[in-house]
Image (tube, rainbow, N blue to C red; front, side, top):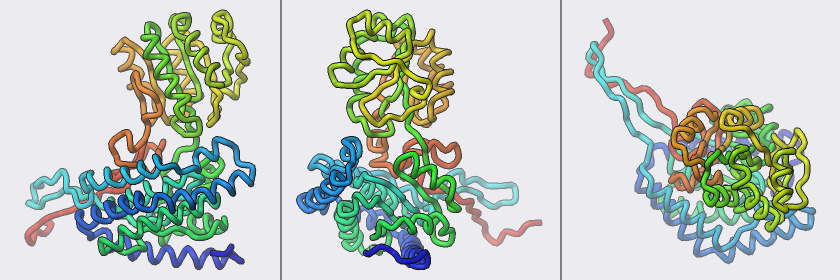
Length: 430
């Protein structure tokens, strides 16, 4: 689709997509679980069958991104591999295997008047997803919205247009095979940014917006949207190594949390180490970072421990480093007196996304779980587990640091709400 010429063109495009999505959402809301699962299964098989087509489309996007000067972290988020395609397919199969939340009735009880009152779980309706660079979001979002009975309008970044179109075609194949409306999953076919503004204002057609991308994108959407938004701004994730922590566990968790993948929102950005634990754990961690080319920005106390152990090249941390989401091989390191100070540091500089403690003391672990106010809080585990696939949600439509409706990885239940239902037999109020 060509770029749009006027704001009116964008408004007309979104109105057309929205009207089709609204009608599809009504059909999906009454679709049976078997039909939705068949659509997901066929879509998963189609992804695998069309792997070469997907990778060829993605190669065009990667080539274009490199030509535009994209950095390695950006390309890492954009690139598809055979493994990623297999993971997308497995994610759809996991979604199909999950219980269908739609229509679930809970808390049904009799009232003194004789009526029964309860709650029924229902789809949100039409979900708009605005995302950048990661084409696997197309499969995850499409699959989750389908199973939860929601229609979805996908607006991916221009850098991934070919990849997104190829993945969306696989979802359409599944919908068609199951006799469900293909308009249940719609991909905006133009990179024109006018469409984003129209989606954010499309209260008539869109029930919720989920942004997936960098801080600038999320800030813009949060500021401009007239439609409710499920979002997080930053992934300033911490690992705190407590006093008496097992050094081997600490090294394993820290290494994975930081270096397993650099460009994701659940990657550790700040390492906090209890002063009493530092001599036993920090030198090995520092040598690991140095060997992997991770730039270390440390406070004076941490730098002294690292340099005394022969770890070279450690830089002084600036105030901005404690709140930085690097999305790169850079890590901030600080020594803290103990648990209280670690919790206070996270409260001051964190983004309420994901934080972890490494400790052998269960009472201290319990305090960390209770007192750290983040969407995901972990004990002796890498922050990289903060993911819908790893949580057993099949996939995720995003991670929310909101405190209302949904928090953390948003899966099927987060894409539904509850309405009150009343069952009577000719009852009237006296």
